[in-house]
Image 1 (spheres, rainbow, N blue to C red):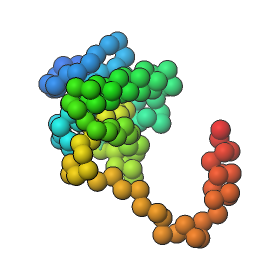
Image 2: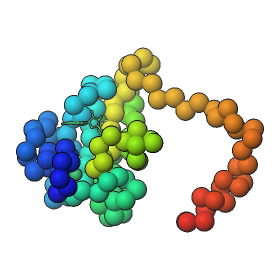
Image 3: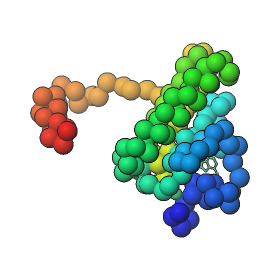
Image 4: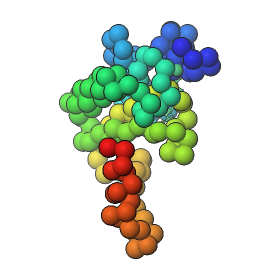
Length: 139
Ligand code: AMP
Ligand code: ZN
């Protein structure tokens, strides 16, 4: 439990949530923003500040639940697709510093959410082998 962490307060029942799933390590509930209908957050019950700093065993349990919820959104909400994503640290848009995965059902072509991976304008100036070598150093 981290002081002033809104998701720790949800885990402890101090703040209500629309709960979807719970076990010893994982909790899933509806995101209050409902980017699309059914937008769900899957979180670790213990506090870790992001996907990147969560022990792999716990991260795997959270991702396992995220997959099942995505399958249910297709079957039971009749979503046509699902985005599963984790924002890691503020530069990537993370606003709640407690590990969570978004499971966002998608409906038809124009459901109001735009996730757009545009081609980087710097692509011509980047050395892909050099970038690949840098990332490989820690693998
Ligand atoms: P992120 O920007 O990846 O850190 O996502 C944090 C998410 O938490 C946002 O989509 C918020 O809408 C959501 N959120 C914040 N407070 C609550 C809350 N009390 N209940 C449910 N979702 C929340
Ligand atoms: Zn927390």
